[in-house]
Length: 120
Image (cartoon, rainbow, N blue to C red):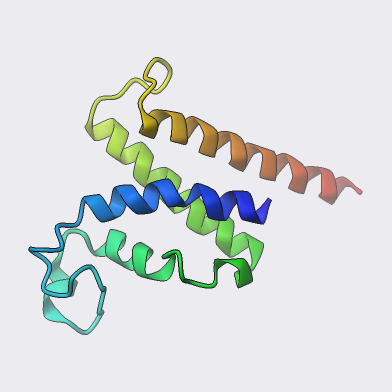
């Protein structure tokens, strides 16, 4: 299940990176909490998430609860993006809507698995 969460983070990573214009970013998408431009940037959450959860980070070593929380942030991000774009999640077949439906199913599977384990 861990690997499914890690693989599923690829799409929001691409989406977030696409919304940060590297040409306009003095740090070139590398978040630095001590750099003045990062402190006032409207993309600071995306930048922080990307830097903590890039394809080279040690996601496989994160505790499962932390990994799920990281994934849930990406779900919220994509959900907010779709809301701003006025997508109808039930009817839309775009990549973002499909990813969001799959991501929510993955979270539900994880929660069900946790609930079953707690009953044992």
